[in-house]
Image 1 (cartoon, rainbow, N blue to C red):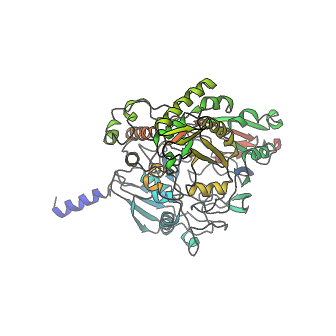
Image 2: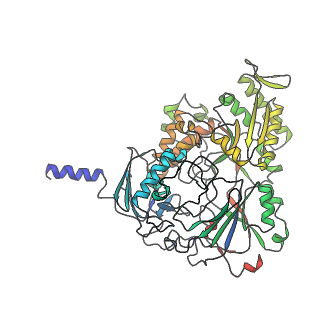
Image 3: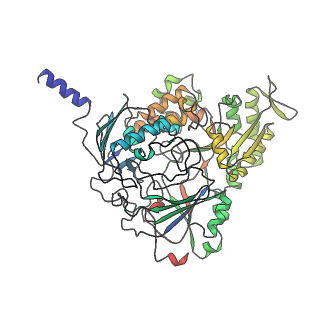
Length: 597
């Protein structure tokens, strides 16, 4: 081969030119389930009838219709905006073309090209172009919520290759998730947003491209969405069988108790119940007894992630791991589950519970090379002990035993009891803090915990604030302890940087609620991002999970492996429930049932 031809051939190989053929879908690992030319997902009814109204509820309030920024509380707007690709609900992490007709990715996934559908349109009829895609990427990264910057930080170059063709080039390093992350990019209209302050709240209904658009709203009270009759994507395989309601109305309620009473009165149609007490005791009303309202438990295979009492370790009080660990012994899950939850929950013991991603036992031989470089800089127990959470038998005697352990730990950390109050042995500072919540339902969980803390001499208080105040305080990290929740997927990736990364801890409004700045966790999160295959991903997540757990950043709560749903019997629904759980936007109004409501 001639030298210049050899060089050119090598350059083409380096850029993946020979391997990157347009395809309709991409999986994180392995191949997509659905073949080229598929007509619909297996978990929908492609012939579902259209029509009728779906009435839903939301808690709190809203003062903005811009869901992409930190400022304000955005209203619920399902189906208004669209992304380049659409995930399937019956695979761990696979996306298929939505706005993008096809995708091109080289074997090393060092870049991605999206080919846009020529028929893709915004609601004003204007075509979706490469300029809109690049504008969306730039505006979200520069003026959107902080997590967009973290999510897109590995994109080093953006290019318009044609009117409907864009390319994103990634920083060096293994990061198989990046093409899928760009597939999740919401596509906004460049023309619409020109001259508008994107980083400010607004109550002007936004221009989207999806199957629904805002028909009317009353700030803080309700949002009404109407199905777009000439929606450009109605026959796409990723949308077939979805979006069957002519109208979706979302009413806002100040708390879950008021919302449940409204449901009983027939003011909305479907309720995904997340309170065990309500599920056990408050669904015995006439409409349930006579069959007009149905209760159903839908199984799912979603990782439950972590819900927990989260410490703000930016506060000096919680920077000592011994203190954090001691407070974990004051939370009695077994008593709580028996007396408050009717035994419906399991204790969460991993940041990735309910999945193969949850660590257990001691580190495997494959994990040790990931952990050994950090020996001495992460808790020694990572290498020598299986992580467990404090347990009791749910009795007063069991509770007292755990409180004795906690008291000794606090003493070892330099805290002493004087006149019944726990104080710092050197400064005399009293041990006092506030648990900030925004849902009154958490009060019955927090108050027994606070009582146990009081028995240790700790003056803890619970403060319940409205959703707006809570949001503002959380975004400013103005709290001591709160109830935090980190949802996880079957394919964790770049979001781990935002959850636990040092850079995220410094960004107001970020997702690193705890304030973790730990080089070992930064490193392990990056290794999760760069996992080359499924087995490597599982191993790396196990290692990250162990280090997070042994740092006692949170006091884990509980989880359940299904969705508890009550609904007025007016719907038809597909028979297949995918691994991600029930998909209510695949339901439809059953004409034969409308008279029962």
